[in-house]
Image 1 (cartoon, helix red, strand yellow):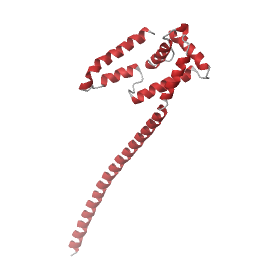
Image 2: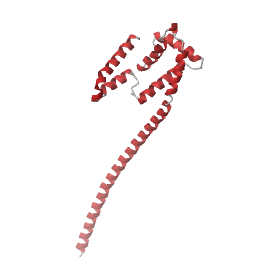
Image 3: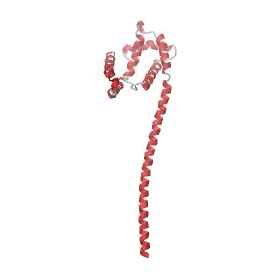
Image 4: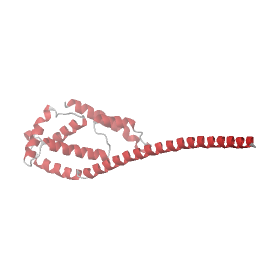
Length: 190
């Protein structure tokens, strides 16, 4: 009888040991699931922050129509150097080239156009820096809604990565030529 109790106790110990080992295995699985869940929650939180930032940016970018109206008013009042009929286009081209190439300063040949803009802006207590920020904001707004490439190099790189659908393949070569033309013109005017 004593042997039977011993065997029953041993069987109970083995069963308990198996149950404890099972609990350990289950705990490990639960812990791994919780770690995965925490990672997912963290990733979701980061994604939500990005979405919120993007929505805030889009809200700010709604002012691009007002920037266009402001630019139209500046253009009407802008006195181009030497009564240059293409002065406004040259001025905007200077800002375009500076931002597209990521330059810090304007080219020397653009300085007189920038100086004329300064005279126009001084009348309404604005600076070249203010104008440039508005120009960049307008460009960023366009990028946000259209292409997201901020420099010529980024746009060209992005073009190389795009797989054109069949109905749009006809545009691929023309776009490549567009970037080559801009590189030529930008390098000529430096």
